[in-house]
Image (cartoon, rainbow, N blue to C red; front, side, top):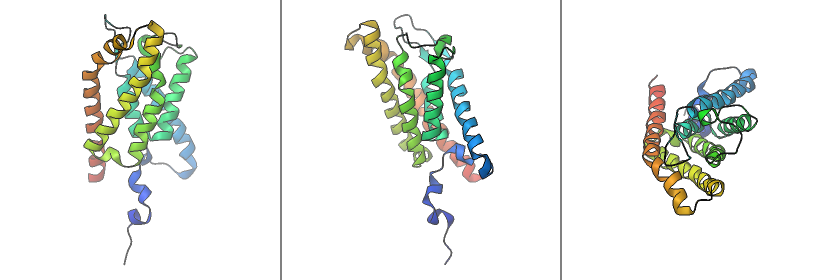
Amino acid sequence: MPVSVQAVSPALSHRVLADLIPGSRAKVTARNIALVVGGAVFMSIFAQLALPLPFTPVPLTLGSFAVLMTGAALGPQRAGLSMALYLAAGMAGAPIFSDHGSGYAFASFGYILAYIPAAVFVGYLARRGRDRSPIKLFGGVALASLMIYAAGVPWLMAWTGADLQTALVQGVLPFLPGDLVKTLAVAGLLPAAWRLINRR
């Protein structure tokens, strides 16, 4: 009785999108390096798509969308390294944070610190196949967004001297509608990409 490849190696069903990029085994390291750097560049570009808000020192950006997409597409290790590279380059002076910022001396830096664990978490979910289901991915992405807030709000409080209520008004409430849209987008795009791939 023939045995399917998937039955022999269940891990194959837990590939992330980046694993589908063709290449010989000898070129895996170079490919992974390119993916890590590409993820950091992708993050840098989307961080510049920012809209300052007059009532809060935290800008509205597409940075979190890039974090979630990078995590789901690259998997936990590569996505975590991409965000670490992005963070390190920005702290070293590269103008790649929102509004071409760099360093750490600004109110929204705490959100950037959370990009690494958020990307790793979403990548972990994708590695377990959650990126095939919109419902399963939606819940995981929503939780990753909460992780970003969990680091961003305390930093905002410490940097501005705001109390918790003020920090929530300035650093959470204005961004919830946008985060819902981002979460829906990620939860729709990744499963759609897998359906397209499976058809081919």
